[in-house]
Image (cartoon, rainbow, N blue to C red):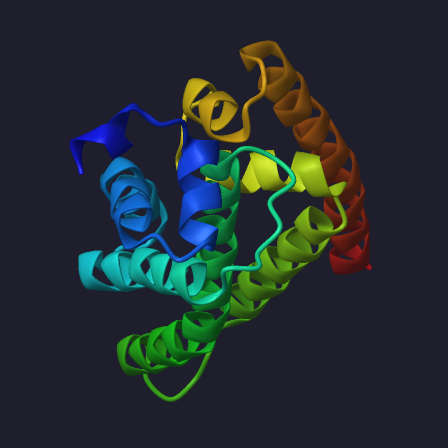
Length: 192
C-alpha cells in the first residue's frame, strides 16, 4: 500500500479505473479531508457535507469509465461543488417554507408591504445574479454566498487572484447598474 502514496493522482486514477482498490483508497485518503472542509464551507450541516463527499467517492468508484479532461483534483472539487448546488436546490424549498412559517408566526396574520418588497428585491437580485456569465456568477456566488476569500476562490478554481478580483469587480458593476435602475423605477412608481 505504501507504494501507492508515491504515485501521481493521474497514475492512481488509471489504476483505479482498472479496478485497483488500493489506488482508490489512496485517492480517498488524499482528497477526502480536503473535499470535506470545502463542502463544510458551503453546507451548514456537517453530516450533509460528509454525505455529499461520500457520494462523490461512491460515484467515482462505481463508474470506472469516467473521462476526466483536467486534473483529478479539479474534477473532484467540481463534482462536489455541483453536488452541493443540487443539495442547495433540494433544500431551498424546505428552507423557504420553514422561513415563511417562522415569519408568519412572528408577524401574525398579515405580511407587510415592506416584506413583500424585500422578497421581490431579493428575487430580482437572484435573477440578475443568474444572468451573469457562468464564470463570473460562480466567483460571485463563492464570494457572497459561501463567504470564501479571493485567495480561496483562486486556489479552488485554479485562477490568479487578479482574475478573481477582476471578475468580482465586473459582477458588482453589472449588478449595481441593473439594480440601481430598478430602484429608481420603484421610487418613481411610489411617488405617483
